[in-house]
Length: 555
Image (cartoon, rainbow, N blue to C red; front, side, top):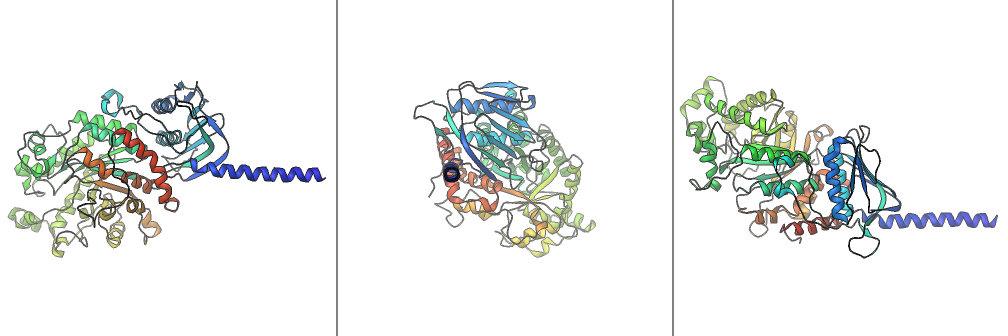
């Protein structure tokens, strides 16, 4: 009897010690963004020399990506087993895995095998990105700089560095690492996790964009908002209107008649879109109208005056539809951003033909003219399975605390904005955001004082966003009803480039804060922890350094 009691006590103590040991290694799962759920078990998985990756044919690109990650972990060269259902690492598409989360995944690390399960390829890629962090690669090679059209359909590997999730069995270089066994069940909190790059003001080029897409994918971001048309430069080739890239693209940063016109050909755009698509990143182009149209008007003066288009001229509507036809063909995503911000109403209010048009058509104000035209284009694009997105001003409403005067009489509206339009809210005002929701519009939250990356620490200290402040951002503001919360699609962080002349300067502003926004969009608010975030960020800091990215020092 006594021996039996001793045995029971021993088992209890042993279980407690084992549990403690498991908890003590749980810190090794240092993942950014923080996963939704992690469960640990006793044991470890060790990479072996002849590692196999099993996968169905439709995941061939993901398997190749996973193989490249394994090569960078150790001297092992994995063997791909297409059509096999079991391997040392198995990629599994299963509709029953997190069926409500198209980007979700389950990563099972067992003693003898690793399974990555998801209901869609996007989830498989996210699972691989998590595994990549846990294993911790040492190579910094990125294939993005030499990607051709033929390779953009595959998910090529990107660089990474050693992670806190990797424990070496010996201290010898190249020895296969081992991972604590456990299960990660993960999915994003918000469906829209965007980074915006402004290339109208300063043009960076294809290789810079591809590198950004690689790093966005590693952070599980899924929308690249590409600001390629504005006053300062027209950056997209439209063959029917060659002057847009001959004259309009030469207006770099408001300097006309420059000898070098920078723009993207349609072939380059297809390459970039395909590269993004392979990483499950949707490219949302921004084609600014009716304001911020200086580059277009410089190319074709009949379009308008100053930086505003003449929306009452049928030829202008035809021009925009011609441009948007090309945009629809180039960008398969279902959202097209039209800007719609900061329209100078003075031109419309002082041009007799525009004033007469407004009177004859019972248009009550310049904002009413803009909303009426926006709705017309929104309906036209809806027939092509596209939605319009525009900044806060696209609603036609007064915006509190705006940087320049807005007159109430300019914002009398006869009709509301179409609920099919997504409002890209940069206005730091809850009441305005709620008003847009009440009109039925979905929202992407980009409150300027929380998401604009262009302000520098040295020259705009009052507007500068620290890493911790970026991490504290709440895209779904407090004070919304449950129904209103559903209208918030997600968030975006913006890299405006008025004062960002080169890639090095841009990198200082983007990194490491982009990682904070990635976690804000992915991780449940109650799971966010800044201290833990900083620990997980170390993996990316080392990787960015090896990529040659000169990121801003964390203070």
